[in-house]
Image (cartoon, rainbow, N blue to C red):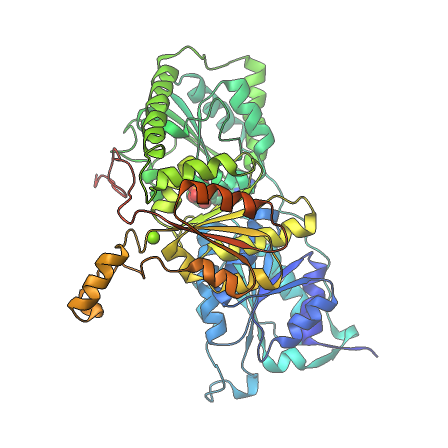
Length: 568
Ligand code: ADP
Ligand code: MG
């Protein structure tokens, strides 16, 4: 008679489902779960806040197609993780959260950290349950892992009460379930494919929009053929960047507004017509634009704009279906159209404006100067993690991605604080896979603060992440040290300091040094270049560049205000 504990069963079940990474914070009642996971050969990464742990676990899901696990304690531990679950669900990324909870015989009695965890997770997940017995643990874990990946991916929650963690059961009384296979793949209906191809062929101003669903779906192969054979201009969404290289000749990112506004047919591949794509509506889109919508989620079809063709299924497969029609027909969108001329002229004009801003000799530097030099030094295959307001927006246009799933950012939910968790996950994977792509985390100073203590995690595991803090002393913008001290003399700062301000010239580089990482304070182009070069050649642990920029630096003039949509 062999007896096993609940903790062992959880660890074995996760291992059986090919879960390789667990991020979390231990405490009563889940310490044994983390230890059992390590005994099974699962990598356990101890973090400093459950929110960041959950961000990290979900990044594993996005990067590998199989969820990472996030392990948290009861009550507040689980509540901290909700932010990560909401973010994963919004991004359609798989993650499995395992939460310890109070002993069942103390429930409703005011137990330590008692909280209705299964109910609380419902709003942030696709599936939330507690196994009814120890013997049911493997099947509930399998269901959580499967549900997180199948259909539209998202977050799943499994609750384990403290008494179950250490409770024992005989092996023969456990229902073991083997590893669930990757999600089944479906093709689009043939008639819909023919309709879509007819719409595409009739386009005067076609545009392919590549979303992070295409990245997640690993559709880079057929999409490259589709763009090349079809001669089509394409525009990646923020995390669609890199599915095809940003420097591909058909990439029209530098004419984004113009491309969206004047396209008459848009092939929308794994991207929602939400705020990121301005709802697909005027004033940012042509009111008569025909959308060919490709998505695996039927409920997504027709959100905000009724598609001219709805192709339901896996992007990879559907891209191949469309390619087959293009090949059979021999069609190619001509390269000498007015549309291409318009796009190319706009791209050249925008590149000129950006270059002029980049080369402004001013000190302190502006955003454009910083990103100009950073982009020159970053390796082509690096993984770029980014968050912040201007830092993320300007950085996205200037830092190029050459490979799929090599950009992670604030995403659909616009979450600040994701960067360090994402970077830790990406770096942990690099170590395991030995491919050694450099992880570079480009943060605004405000964004960095949300999860800043995770630099200790990076130092502890010697993760070679390069953090670049673009420091403008505040949220959106701050003030210079002189203005700050004048304000302090005028009176109580809590009544007069602008709410957007953070401590001017805060020494984030010293935070990194406090834990043994490399820290650099940067004010000039020369300091920037030498600190970045030094960081990129250092692999023994993390580095942080604290780049003090002009607190008044802003984005270049934009054609449209942010977040507009017509009320029609
Ligand atoms: P972005 O932020 O790049 O605009 P979104 O997250 O809004 O992208 O949209 C991604 C879409 O991709 C979601 O609607 C999701 O259902 C879909 N999706 C995810 N994986 C696949 C896949 N393999 N095939 C088709 N659609 C997918
Ligand atoms: Mg800032």
